Structures are given as structure tokens and as C-alpha cells.
Image 1 (tube, chains in turn red, purple):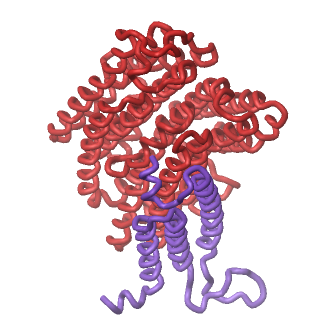
Image 2 (image 1 turned 90 degrees about the vertical axis):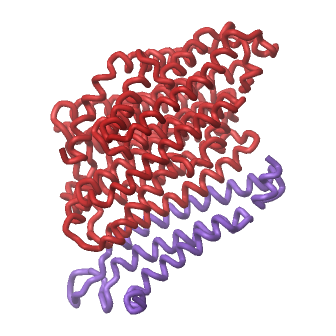
Image 3 (image 1 turned 135 degrees about the vertical axis):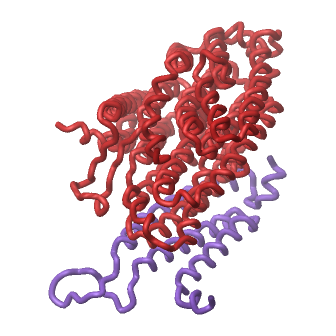
Length: 492
Length: 117
């Protein structure tokens, strides 16, 4: 059997699993959780095998129904598509964490639907990452977005429906910008296959529609990624959602927007590089503003999940700045930061979830002294905090260092300064958190009497924290893994 | 300029419709009206993509006796069929969210909801 036949399986497994979840969990809700965990494990295994294949013999593709592209739908696996292994791995840990968490939070009848939505969301992300066809990409984008909107509202806490509606309205508008641009590209080139579009754009005239399509695609995807000033939906949605959902939304779903932007740039670097300098300049500036604004707002938040949500905006800024710089180092740093930030942010949101699960508190003042009663969770939170600041032996350091190098390489020192300032701001707010956890007396009785989270939560947390440290030590591997993709994209 | 616009009146109409929808999303206060704006934008995009594949005096591309060129491109229509499914599910989700907002807050006017937060 050829390894490429695994490529449709990585999408089909979570899709099929999602559909079957309500049946499996019909009588006992816990079965749904275990089933979802098993499906996620299988998906992660297939994803890892595919990434190993890419590492061994470079990008490859699969033709759906044996119709050759550009007529048939192509699934394409390249180095950027390696995010499917990261998605699979993080989904496994999130599902394991979620089993206990949702049993406390949701009504038993809703639990199977929670897992259905989580698996659909994962299937959407994985499908998006491996799609080689513009319209197919849009369909997967909608699958993951719709399940995301529903997941935000699922717990029905306080203003959950409002937050979900705001997310849905902005998300739907951004999807329409993407679809409109896909339509324009189809009108100009007569094809939807990404590689083929790039080839045919080179020759054609039609400078205006092609430029409008670029603007529409990047606009649509940067709403999904919550780049400043299009981030308004993110803080509420990511704060209100149940913690495992926040982890997935913040760590993975916003990255789909970034991945989409990278795919668009792949087309345009190959076909119309002359249209890119203006866009790149804008992305770099908006990224720099995102870094500073996100970090600045995070400092004033009392709610830990709100703080983490603003920190996501700040980190998305790093990624977009790296992309916008347009230099090799910047792009490599940005690409690796997509993966590393996913790992770190899932760690932080799940640790925050464990704390909320045990204490019921989410404000920093209420959580004083939690480090004494929940030592493991707090230690994980600290490791995550150090990684996201970018202290050298952790996962956050190398990619931020590369983005700063990228700024130097592109001869734009201003942006290197923004990287440093961002890290400084981020340090301030995470120091506030660590200070409250470890060095203050508990003020609330719930916190003083809380115990360490159950093993099914601490287990994934420790694995994630170990991942954060390991990615710092072995940071060279992902950097050299994405390097050929970046060099190919820049045409060097 | 005007002649070029007239020749592409179908595209122009789609773009105008798209902007009308966008205006409704931004300016309307009622959540249902906001969402109707999104529905208008969807219709505009669908119309644009369908019109891309249309040929004047074209016939459906069904082979057999009486098949006569030029043919209409069937791919955009297949795409939009999928697009409509997506749009319907988005609408269903949005309306159910609006119902729950109304049950909880007693209003679906955006400014009153903001005050309630």
C-alpha cells in the first residue's frame, strides 16, 4: 500500500468519528468521551505517519476519486501541512482533559454533542491544512468555523450566546470575503487547484481582480486569525468558552487563518510577487501593533482566561510580523511559532481550566495562593508562562529569536525592537500571575481548601509542559523541517 | 468606463449587493437584520460565481442527441450548491443563537444588549 492513501484517511477518520459519537454515547455519556479520545488518537497516529513521509521524501498529493488535478480535487501534503500532526497531538491531550471537565460543566445529554463538535472542528482544521483546492479549503474552513461558533455557546454561561453571535457574524463575513475572492480567482484563471492557479496567474493580465482577490483573501483570513484591528470577537469568545474549547480555539483555530494566509502567499509569491510588497508592509505593521496592543491590554486583565486571550492576539502579531517581513528568517520563525504557540497556548488554557475546575475562581485576586494547593498545575502554568515570554531554554525562544533575526535581515530594525518590547510586556503580565499564585496568601476559602486536579487533567498538562521544554531544547528540528518549504515559497 | 461597467452589469450588480449586505451587517441594530445582511452578502457572492460560468445562449452540458455548443460551465453551479448548504447551516445556527439571546436577555437590539453586559 502506498503511503499517500493515508492522506484522505486523516480527514475521514475524525469526520466519521464525529458523526458516530452521538450513537456511541447514547446510553452513557462517558463512552462518547472515550470514543472521541480513541478517534483523536487514531487521527494523530495517521497524521504523524504522514509527516514522517513528508520528512522522508518531500511533498506529495492524493487525487480524490483518481481524477487528476486540476479537474479532480487534490489533497496536498507539504511542510506547512505538517500542522496536522500538531493538531492531532494537541486534540488527543485536550480530549483526555475534557472528559472530567465537561462532566462537571455540561448536562449529560449535551456531552456527546460536545465531542461531535470537537471532532468536526478537528476534521475541519486537518482538512483545511491538507487541501490543495481553493473551494475545498473554503468548505473545510466553514466546517471548523461553524463547529467553533457552536462550541463557544455550548456551556450557556453568562454572555456565551452573545460572544458566539459576535464570533459568528464576523466569521461569516470573513468567510464570504474568502469565497468572493475564490470566485474572482476562478473567473480569472478558470481553475480552483492551488498549484494550477499559481501557474495560470503568471501569464494573465487582469491586474485589478487579482489584486482584489489577494486583498479579500488576506482580509478574510486575518479576521479568522484575529489580527489587530480585526480581533474584536476574540477576547469574549475565548474567555466564555469551556476551557478545553478555549485551548483549541486559541491554540489551533486562529492558526487556520495564518495557515490560509500562508497558502495565499504561496500562490502569489509564485505568480505575482510584484503585488506583495505593499501587503507585506501592512501585515508587518499590523503585526507589530497587534503585539503591543494585545500585550498592553493583557496587563490590565483580572480574569486569567481573558489575559490568555489577549496574549493570543499579541502572539498572532508575532506570526504576522514574521510573515510580513518577507525575509527567510522571519518566515521560518513565523511558521515555527504557529506550531510552538499552539503548544504553549493549549498548555496555558488547559492549566487555567484545571484551576477553574477545582476552585471555581478565575480572577487573579481570588486565585492568590493557588500554587500551594495545586503545585503541579501551577508549575505547568509557570512553564507555559516562561515559554510564551521566550526565556531561552523553552519553546517560545527560538522562533521569536528568528523573527527578530528576520527583521534584521530585512533591514527593518524597528520591528526587532517591537519583538523585544512585546516580550517585555508579556513578561510583566505573566510575572503578575506567578506572583499571585505563589507569593500571596489565599483570600478565598475555595482556593485554600482546593486539592490538586485529577490525574486525567494533570497527566496531559505534564506532557504539554514537557513538550514546551523539549521544543526549546530540540528547537532546531522544526526550524530545519520548514526551511525547504519557506525557501521554495520565496523562490530561492 | 460606463460601457465597460454596462458590459459587466452582472458583476457590478453582485458587488453592489455585496456592499448593501455589508452595510446592513455594520449599521443595523437588530441582530436578525444584521444576519439578513450576511444573507444578502451570501446571495451576492453566489450570484457572482454563477454568472462567471454563464454563457449567452449557452445550453446545459448534457451530451447526447441535440447537444449543441456553447455550453454553460456547470462547475460554479455545483460549487454554489455546496455554498448554499453552508449558508443554510450558518443561518440555522445564527437564528438559534438569537432565540437563546432573546430568552436570556429579553431583547435582540445590539445597543440594549451592550448595556446589559
